Length: 203
Image 1 (cartoon, rainbow, N blue to C red):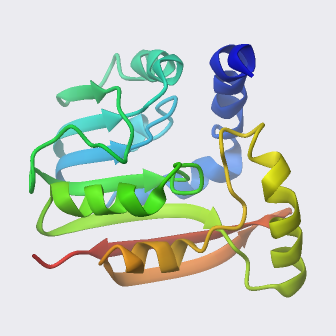
Image 2 (image 1 turned 120 degrees about the horizontal axis):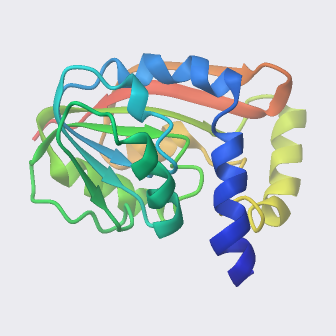
C-alpha cells in the first residue's frame, strides 16, 4: 500500500476531483470565503482558481505529494498563501485566527472528523464561517445499505473515503449551528449523496 498511497492514489484523486460535475459545485462554496481563509484538505488545489477577494489562504494538506500538485496551481495567484503540511485533527494555527474555513469533500476521508471539526471551531474567529460540501450517508434505504456494505472495502483504495458518514450529525455534534443546508445526489452517481452548507460557532 505504500507505493499505491504515495504514487498512484494522489494521481487518481487529482483526476477524480477534477471532474466536470464537481467543478460546477466548487464556486458555490469558494465564492462565500472572505478574509483570512483556511482550507482543510486542499488536495491537488482544484479550488484555487475560484478564490476571490480574500486576504490570505492557509492551505492545509497532510500529503506532500498532493501539496506538490497544488503548488503548480498556486503559481499565478494574486493573494498571499501558505501551505501547511499537517492533518486537520492538529491545525498548526492560533485560536480565533481565521475568518473562514473551507472544506470540500474532505470530512468523508479525515481519520477523525469530530476532532478535525473541533480544531476548525478553535481556529475560527467569533461568528466565523465554516463552509462545506461533502458526500455522506443517503436517506434512501437502498443506497444507505449499499454504502454501508461497500465502505469497509472501498475506503482502502480511495484515501479513507467513507460513503456512509452522517455529515450533518458530525458537524452539529462539533458545536456548529448550521445556518444553511442542502442535500442532493450527484447526477449519475446514486451512491454519492452531497451535503452543502454553512456552519457558525458562537464564542
